[in-house]
Image (cartoon, rainbow, N blue to C red; front, side, top):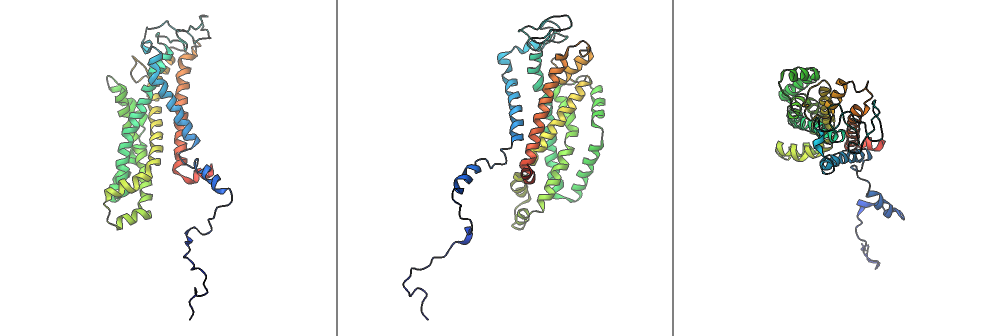
Length: 325
């Protein structure tokens, strides 16, 4: 039988069929390369907008003492009840450049109060969310990955904690304490800040535990600790970030709620305590809108920025949401 190459034609090489049907269309290579620069899930406009707002706030906070005297946040350091620059108060006093955002009833400068009080308010949320997330990660991983009676105990404790009226309990605890500072307030809030992250992380770990790559790692004899930290944890990072931001928002909201009731340090007040002082002094009736209005606007901006970051992280972690948007 004659050989197939006896006709003198060159030998046919084996064709690599892995990329069959993927020949580029004319001009398509350049276009795809350009679009791939922006085809990154982290380039989410909601996430980037919220991160920019928070970053700008922190920039002003950390550099605020470089261009403004933060000692003016102490009581008695400025004239009383001065309006913002360009406005007048009920006594027809005009604002002065020395206090562009005005002053309040105790002689605190509002700009200095914002520079000092905003990080104190955000700091409560950061501490409470960090402690709550640390506990939530440990318990959520144990409940979701180990299962059995550990899962039953963690789930029962989580359900009980969620059903407790946390704000009422915190009010009772803080009314008993002789003195409350920001760290103590954050730790008290973190007593209830671990339950929601635990439930969320447990659900995600339960879902990933049955995935193919985790099952292959188990069959290959990979230790459980390595599976948790090398296989499951990297895939959980966007979910953990979204849960942390949500937890931080809830902690700040709880802290502001307590401060509006008069709890919290009052020598250098945070944003919530400033609003409480304005309510106590009937600033709304006296048309001193800058006393309560400016801290309220700053709080609203912080909450909107955290909401945008949270929504953006949800879309980053969920490809279906990315396609829908």
